[in-house]
Image 1 (cartoon, rainbow, N blue to C red):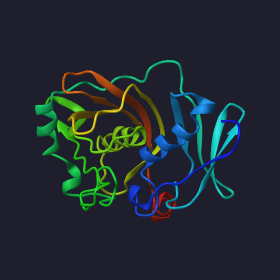
Image 2: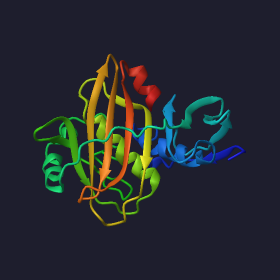
Image 3: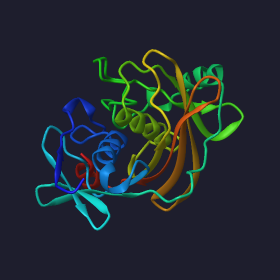
Image 4: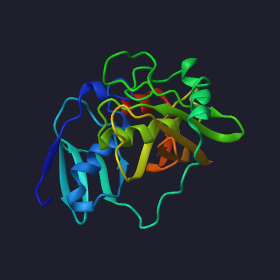
Length: 240
């Protein structure tokens, strides 16, 4: 990519009510910027990616900047050479059981979220329900059977479960930075397992990892992300 490219995120692909799902946006930005940064990318979000509006993806010194008018939305860079740490594999039966403990079923900061929102029934909604895994503190898991999967959606699936390794009551956590390495997109109609693990928290930031597996344990992809806890209603408006 040597020229400015454009992309647009459909309103159905929101996270907070008025901005894109963070993982989906990161996946789209990484895909559009692949000609500059390669296929393994890290995306830093600077603002909530807006919906249903044209965004400009501009190369800049080996990176790509995503702009909404004069506002810098994201920076896409080449991921570090090392692989992100791998979240632990759990069986399909364990993932199904874990999903019955989805904390978002009781309290959800963004119930209309594309990936994990429990108030949506429209076709794009994925309705993932990652819950705690018995015997693995800080680990959540759930099944995912893709309908019409693509690489942007795989980024999204690797994103939201990480947020549910954190306490989403009170001020919610939102995605700030995400690096992903996708080996393959799961075939439509074939069940997969998504697992996320909390690694560390420092103040208002937390580091999480996630992975997407076939039921036999083969890896589709993995990610590492930094989440940021919102501290006020103005922060929530900035994320929306």
